[in-house]
Length: 234
Ligand SMILES: Nc1ncnc2c1ncn2[C@@H]1O[C@H](COP(=O)(O)OP(=O)(O)OP(=O)(O)O)[C@@H](O)[C@H]1O
Ligand SMILES: [Mg+2]
Image (cartoon, rainbow, N blue to C red; front, side, top):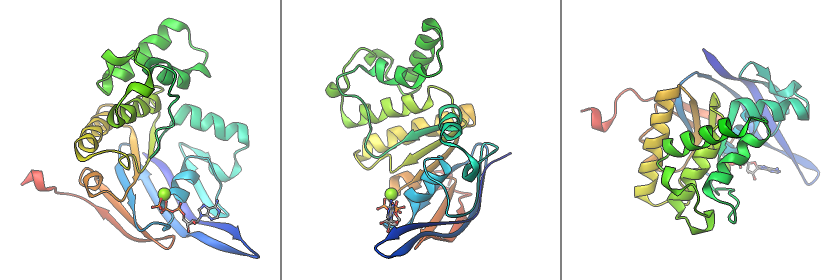
């Protein structure tokens, strides 16, 4: 099933008296269960495109349909609802609350949903188990390593079981070992729940896990690669 459809999307930002075209007629479709990534030089438009797909921003022209909703037509409230129900975000900086515990940081994602406490607790503990942090639930974020923090961010994004996960340079603050480890975790979640993952990355270590690599340059798609075989398959 097609879950993301981007059609002729243009995004311009005002600069001085003129405008800068960050996305220049992008058309891309993503199907449920894809594990795909946007790659390209700094400034090529990766984050801009993720922000539009994540309903954090709107196209200047063109159409983006995400989980059945037209992004350009959404009100603020409808965009927030789409994010709350269907989209999980993982960023380069973890955006966690340092003085709260691991459990509380993941639980925050559920507070808007007004679920009863026992359901919330189960959902949080399940999510912590997916990322291997079930024994650290009561630890403060400020006491965690970078890799552990990124795992909390993944658990927080996954706790609502969104259909789509958007990850903007999730390995930027991690060493090689932690990068492999979070990629393995996300690949497992992708396979287990058929969650669609879309990354932006410069990192070869991330790219080697992707099933599809979309190359952007100057706001255009220059190559859309389906990866059919990997080194470890030989
Ligand atoms: N709010 C904004 N106002 C003006 N220009 C912007 C804005 N957001 C992004 N841009 C410009 O649009 C271009 C694309 O930015 P974007 O952040 O999407 O690049 P990127 O591919 O994610 O780069 P990086 O790899 O460095 O994260 C850049 O030239 C950037 O300066
Ligand atoms: Mg970026």
